[in-house]
Image 1 (tube, one colour):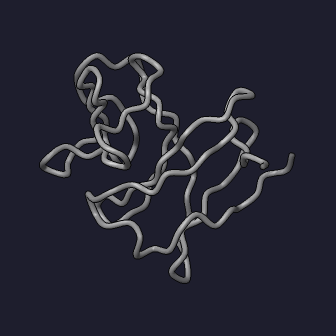
Image 2 (spheres, one colour):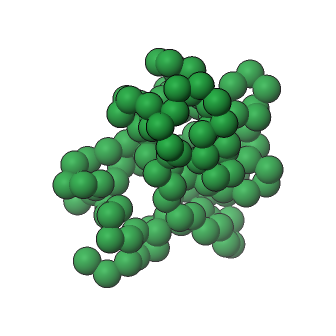
Length: 122
């Protein structure tokens, strides 16, 4: 499948350090949950899968940031990740989060497919 750009949400749906917008992708032949957040004015997306143990990270639906809005946290073991890069910042990480490319233009956030990440077909 050729790479594609898929509309995800309106730009206003993502507040800096706020709730995420969830979406589904095919990764490794499996349907996986992913999430998009805004941090430092930019938009970022990752698989909702901790690098420590492949479990979903949100501590409440669509909540990934710690109380300070500075780190993405895994609710299970407390691994912390840099919101802009997905790199491990502390705790029991084994590498970083799987990043999904986003672009933002004309008030819309789009995610980009690649060889490893494809849209879920219903």
